[in-house]
Image 1 (cartoon, one colour):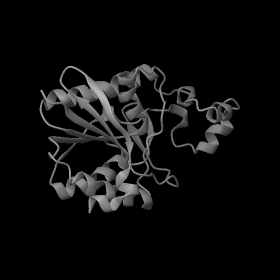
Image 2: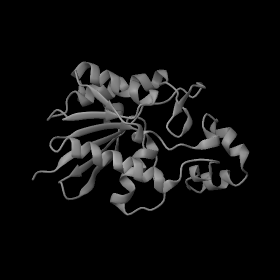
Image 3: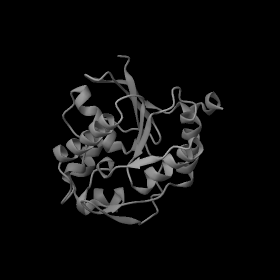
Image 4: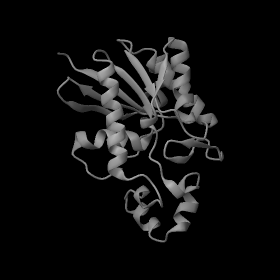
Length: 214
């Protein structure tokens, strides 16, 4: 069996001036739209995805606004219906939802040294989702999508934390965040039915060299 490809794609840049929230399955969750830059990134991503050969068998996304707006240009032009899955949503960070990064740092004097040293911090969020629960729900969602579509490549538009959750087990990494996917980066995983393995990570060629997708 030739391996198929699962494309895990992060949303475009968010509009961090937004205060929009949504009542999610775990509580009130930050739900900003894309910024102007993010919308441009989504357009460039769409041009890239329209050239995929073979065409993806299915497209899924988190239902948060920034992912819906990222996948929309591609889905509309390709005539593909997007499936929205709650379990692909970003990690719920409880009391930190909707807070600016500067506010989070100011709330706990131990956070800035952790950030400077390259450590993940979201497990310190008061009332936030636990790491194992988050990783299990994201990977459960990916498993269900692949079971629903036993053949063909899959596109999944989600979040940086969710991409870390999906890739961590494949790389033998036990902590929650180990890299920061760029906005609209394509992170490709090969699946042969028995195992999965990363193929190429943090690919933003459509942003750095958009002429290749004209």
